[in-house]
Structure formats: C-alpha cells, structure tokens
Length: 373
Image (tube, rainbow, N blue to C red; front, side):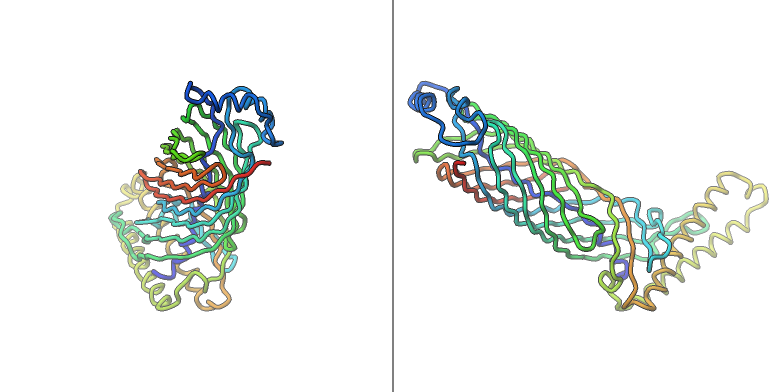
C-alpha cells in the first residue's frame, strides 16, 4: 500500500567515522639515531599538545598539532523497527507492532563532513564534526491479521522509498599511541543530526578501535599505513515526529487500497466471530480459546482503526497530518573495517576505509591537511 509511506520515516542515523590516522610514535632503533638525537636536542616549537616538549625529549615524534580534513562517508545498514505508533490529525495513536511485519528495512546515508582537530595531549586528539548528509530509507512490509482458525495472512503490503536531507554536528576524542610505526587507536565520537521531519535532533555514538602499522617510503616524511579494526554504532532509538500526509503518501489509488484493506479486515472479523460462536460454552470458557479470541479481536481492531483513521485523513488530504513514533536500531551494532592511508608529507594525507561483514557496509574517503599550532 503506497499510502503507508509514513513508515519510510524509520530513519537510521549514522555518524561519519572521521578518525584521521596520525599518532604520536616512539622512535626506536639504531637506524633512527639521527632522528632520536634531533628530537631530544631540538626545542619543540608549538603550544600544543600540552607536554609536547617533554614527549619529544622522551623520543616521541609528534604529528603537527592541528589539522582539518574533508571526508566523504557512505553507509548502508539493515534496521530493526519496534514499538510503531501512528495517528492522524492529532487523534489517537495506534500501536501497529502486532499487525505490521517488515520484509525489508534498510537505510542509506551519504555525508560530507569537515573535521577540525587538535592534539590536546601527546596521546589524545580532540575534534569536531560538521557535515551535511542525504538519507534514504527503503521499506518493504505488510499488514497481517488472523482469521477464525488463527491463521495469519497478509491483507496489504507495500514497498516504498523516502529521501531526507540533514545537517549534523558533533565532537570526538581519539586516544592513541605508536611505537616503531605500529600503533593502536580508540576513536569515539558523538553526533547530533537535525532532520526537519523529526521532533528533535537524532543522537548517535560511534566507537572504533584500530590496530595498524606505518611503513616508511623512500621520499622523506612519506609513508603508507594499513590497519584493521571494528566499527560500533549506537543510536538514540526513540523517534517521534509530525508531518503532512501529502508529503509521505502517494495519493494515487490510495482510497481504493484503503477500501480493499477495510473489506479484508471485515471478512477476517466475520471469520473470527463465526469460529467463536461455533464453540460450546465449555470451549468458550477454555483459557486458551479466550486468549486466542482476545488476540484476534485486538489485531483486527488495530488494523481497522488504522485504516479508518487513514480513510478519514484522505478525505482532507491536503491539510491532514500524520503523527508517528517508533524505536529503531541497527540490525548489527558491530562490523569489521580495513583501511589504508598515504602520507605525502607531514602536512598532507589521503585515506580510504571500508567496513563490511554483518548487515552494514560503509566506505570512507578523506583528505587531511595538518599544521603546527
């Protein structure tokens, strides 16, 4: 049913993972004696990070203390949707969990972000995130109701797509350390994404541990880094909103689809009533039959109320509104990531990363510029 496009508001917000692979590296080995001597004898020229000079005296080579990167992030993830509530024109909200079954639900996000950062301490990077994203949801679902034999069947189905634009901002920290080119980092960021169709900005939290190794190239200050790690995303799953009916419903044949749905619900209700009236008094007193009868009536009432509410809203479609609430979550919170970065010199870096396994796939590309502060 195209009119059930309100379900495309099941929006999954993903923070763009914006960790930039630079780190404080302890220099070791006889072949690096010249660099070690330079670190221990030279005066550290920048204000940040705090204790930067002390770190260099202990043979730690620091990246430039400030930077800015431009990132492109794309992600596709399957969703789990629960506690679906829908109402029309500020009327009663109907919980549809019992009658709606999702065949497919996924969200795709594409974002451009800018990430300024500073090394506050030699082993702690702090950064901000500012971005704009385009979000797309794809939903396939059906409305299911029982008959008198407690056989559930689909009386309507839909497959729909919706697009949203959003702006985001957030902040993050990355504790990290390296020794002899090998490094370990724990990236953590929080992001708030403002979508006009939602009552309040959506919150998300990303945690990304990584282990990697940098390999020096013949060109001075250049290297190639490779890493593996994990990506975990958590979102504030409760979402509510209020939107115009005409913005989320295709009105073509909508009335016909509603009428057919109501007719199917009425037929199922007649089947349930016939079954119940055919039971003997003793059978009607059986707790199992009582529970079965109550569950069937409840599901049919919910489906009928929803379709009747939609029927009334369609009569004034140009001015009608839809109120909704739901709880959404990613099907898999974790996935695996691999990445690589080419450092042209200590100022410029180019990075790529791919996440896969589980029900989420993601791609990240980044260009970074660093300078002393």
